[in-house]
Length: 438
Image (cartoon, rainbow, N blue to C red):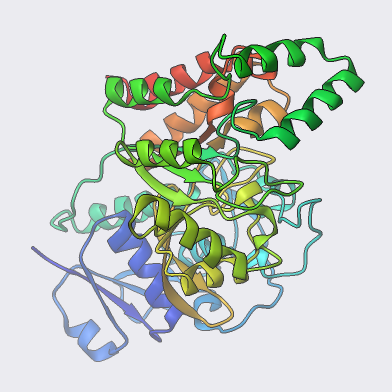
């Protein structure tokens, strides 16, 4: 097996991170980085150079210098179209295999460089999809990092067909956020009485009727769709991840009381069939110490370590949120995605390590980007189930085309098939059929 030898003028942390991401993580290809020009020139291995100028007639990708810099500053992207996709960081050297610095573009997107620059936050303090470079350049719904990586591979194999690499297969990972395990049941006397009063004030007779039927055990709670989810798991051989909001009640944190026995039993039941993670509460962004307390509570219920996480309301502020998770021994985070639009927030559909730009270092936290959320389609975009399915199919096809991992984010309540979620159970079942069906 012949290793690819890559010459770089300097082995910076950014260079190491980006080349590991492209070659080891995405392309599953062995490579060696060197900044010894003599050793590179005298080698007979398949090789390529990444530098400001070519030093031989070997395969050459021109660098614009971005990966050799440190710190965060506003940068000129100068986007232009190449092979049907808008790219940025153009380079001028004719010998360059691509007319843009593909490695710098990969790093810019995956490191979330733009989220370290000043931006206008949305109502929940988030960086929003509509302000992203991916949305502005029209490729938010394309995993461009994976597409570019495959282009690099194609260029390499055209010159060195003997290069060996492993074949990556498409994967599907369903995930669920349990913000409220039940709509009416297990809410306690005070919350239930308050809800009845609110419903009376609104003259919401349907709510009063269903709440009463659930409390009298005449019908199942509409949010209790967990047995249905277990049926899906069995039918399609799925191994989902559940994120439980295990926090004190607040304006945005409305799950069941953490002392509730039925709630604890539900969590224990789901642990038997799937992996679980913490869903850090809304205000944990402002009070990071809440994460440790919520995590400790959840770990006591399941009697084992919990090392997965997804932020409630997708409230993610870089690098602070991820540093909080790392300090609490979280190894895997699933927040990387937008609430307002579907697609690929970091331009990628492969799990990757978080790079802390302020510290200029690769961290132990693995980021698992999701592509679509039920609430995005229904609440933000106001789509019909039929229109939502068209977007979901396109996203799955994009991920399949690059043999990536398609991660969906759904909630137990949207499978209720009632009221605002009428018709949406079908959407999810079609998603499962497209992503996991034979």
